[in-house]
Length: 225
Image (cartoon, rainbow, N blue to C red):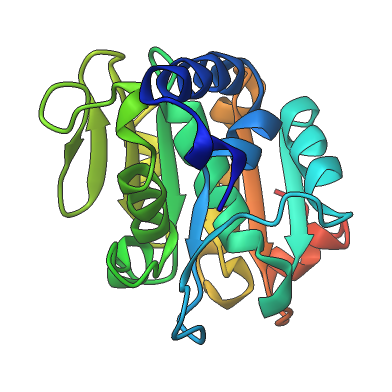
């Protein structure tokens, strides 16, 4: 039982709302207070708070806040995919943001909300586990669609896209997250197409387990586009 469980309902609501106001100013606070993950190996308590105290988490969030271009090598235990699903969602919870989440195939980018799979699926999972006391109402403040989550009140969205440059060139993104980018044969084209986003004040993040190719060349600062 947590401290919140022992508080009167009104006190809990006010506490959650105060934390939400802080979270909208700070992605660290958002990850700390409002991000839940799904551990499919845990049969007792699969839905868990994000382990934000791990030593690499806050430094990565700060790097993302202050650097328009990041390339991150990851492993399964680092929770990097969950982290950037959370940060993509956090960005889209602000006015006028278009965040693209990219994987090799569209199906990979879409994933599945109910099993916490894929970039968009994890963002949807996190959104669905934000406490009702915050006041976010599906159908009023946000809409879940097959390839995107829309926030009409903020004119924002998180949009799942497949590898390649076409969709990136056709839209003006605020942020682009390319997951498992080392396995995308068209990563170099996508990265080149993201240049207006980066130059315009947006952000581009490449995350992947290791594999030779354009994304690895970017990670090692050898990619010339």
